[in-house]
Each structure stands twice: as C-alpha cells, then as structure tokens.
Image (cartoon, rainbow, N blue to C red; front, side):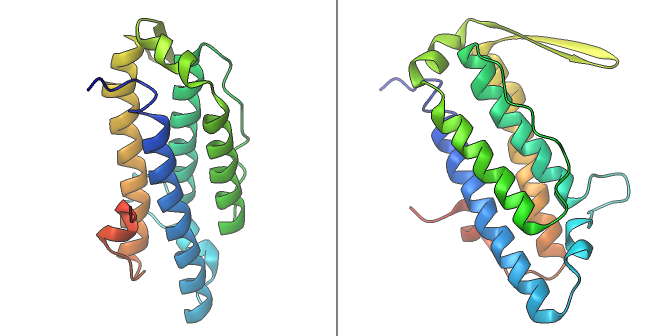
Length: 168
C-alpha cells in the first residue's frame, strides 16, 4: 500500500485538531463548573518561556493550513491571532478544518517534489514537499497540540489519552 501526502496530512490533522476542539469544550465546561475565569486557562503556560494555550492553538492552526496550501501550491488563508475565548479558538479550529478539507487531494499529492521555502527573521528553511510535511509540519503540529493538552491537564482538566487520540 502506498501512503499519499494527502492521506498522511489532511485526515490526520483533521482528526487531531477535531479532538483538540472537543478538549476545549471540556475546558470551557471545567472553567464554568469550577468558577474559573476562562482567561486563566487560555493564558496558562507550562513554563514561563513557553506560549500560552491560546497561542499553541493558533500555531497549530497556522501549521496545518500552511501545509495544505503549500503542498497544493495555493495561498494559505491568513487568520488574525486575536482569539481570546474558547468559542473563538473553536471557531478558528473550524475555519482551519474547513480550509484544509477544501484543498484538492490531488494538488496536495502533487506537492511532494515542490520546493517549500520558509522564511523566519533570522533563518530560512528549504524543503521538498514530502520532507516539509514529515520533518517540519508533523512534529511541530504534534508538539503544539500536545502542549495545549498538557497545559489543560496540568490545570486540573479531567482528560486522558483517549481525549487526545479520539475514538475511531
């Protein structure tokens, strides 16, 4: 069996980001049930030098919408990083999932050899499409959604591995 770039990206990202949306539902209910101001959880961090929960979700969103777009050779949508509530984070997840779900799988599969150049203030990274997905996007995406999970778990949310993994 051959695994395509599309199969290794969009369905996996959709499942995991959808799982994160369900975790955010639980976080919102947790805050309400315990009288915790939502901003406390939204701004929580695992360490002082790490991004807060809100930014973890934003970065994960940027990674997967950028991946689908770059592999397909289309312009990724730009989302303002202004989310300040659980509802806004879930709306961003939904917009991200809508976008990646709208990208033609054939275009994504055709992007394996496409050169992907990422420019940062102090560096530039060049990949072919397959290596971009496997060695940049996937590890970064999992890092940020795992960190979001860990922030909420650390702050008392009753979630476990099956919340993170989802149910088939």
